[in-house]
Image 1 (cartoon, rainbow, N blue to C red):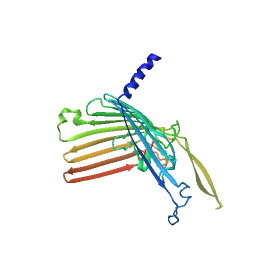
Image 2: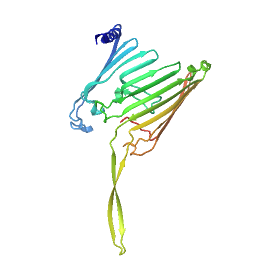
Image 3: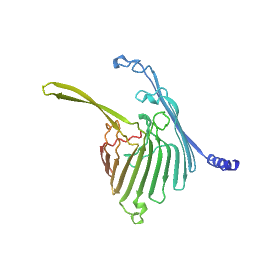
Image 4: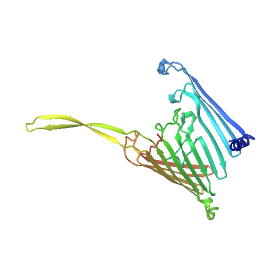
Length: 312
């Protein structure tokens, strides 16, 4: 046991010596008072006269090793922020290591595939939005011009710990291929072309959904008398446990023009948002821009049909 433990101690000493620690901290606080003209009373304020949102980040780097942690406190959450954030704790920590062309992260991380049609994990403090993924993330560049990503984890839901039936598991792979770097014949070309693709699957264990509907019937007998009665019909929905989605994209740049287009599609995903319909989802996002000295033009378009895609 001692011989097995010694390499771990040596590795720990190596990553601690010569390291660099950085960080930042922010506290936002407000004091609230009643205002009868605006209809603000103690009850509308929920008797909370003071609100505070704060965080502190600490980041440690040493060569190819990095680790970080974020402490957050909402005492009480500022008005306009979800009250479910109330409390203090550590909702974000990670450790990562880069070994040549491979980079691995364990813990919490943010990731985005393409423009984010099928996967986007991000944080915006001023909006009170944070859906970081807790799990494992890997990036691999086997050859020049190729970047591959793979991840598995669960997304943050306020302070709730992960349990088998309360949140979905996210799994995804992504690839970017810079053709000008891959093919030597295109290295010096003025036109730059990048292709990419993603696949994301979410696993959930949804309960069996049942719906009842009353149907009215009217019977007229041979004497002209009518009888009204109703019949209750029960429907059972077998919701899918695994829902997959995929996307493909391209980016073309030449001269001052740049064109980006991404198309995504998801499988049947009946849920409360789409009124439990069994229908595939589709989305298309495209941008075109032109820039030169003293002039810049940008146009974007998005088309979505039943594409709301959440991890649970």
